Amino acid sequence: MEYTPEMKNRLKRLEGQVRGVIRMMEEEKHCKDVVTQLSAVRSAVDRAMGYIVAKNLETCIREANSEGKNAEDAIQEAVNMIVKSR
Image 1 (cartoon, rainbow, N blue to C red):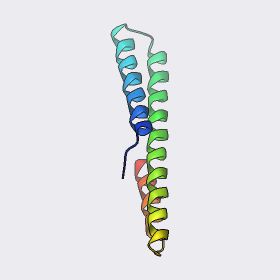
Image 2 (tube, rainbow, N blue to C red):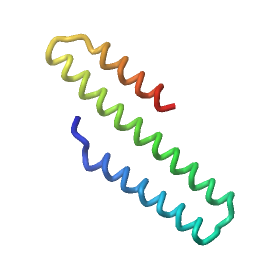
Image 3 (cartoon, rainbow, N blue to C red):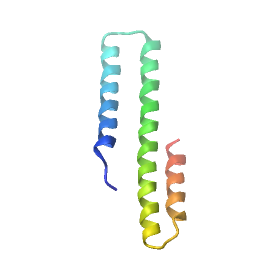
Image 4 (spheres, rainbow, N blue to C red):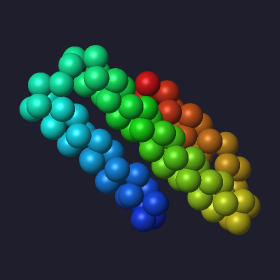
């Protein structure tokens, strides 16, 4: 699978969010604020994983169709990846 610049940029933004949480801890910000930001990080990770799985699935389905194969295996693998990530 090709990891696009958009995918990498998503992770770079996540990296910045995590650094921000660390900075908040170092500045002894309120626990509620830190947890709120950690929740945002978790949500962003979930969205990034979903995006990557979706793009991978799209590629696999296109390849299967062009080769005259059934895409059912690729779909099942994507579902398994999503279920495992939970």
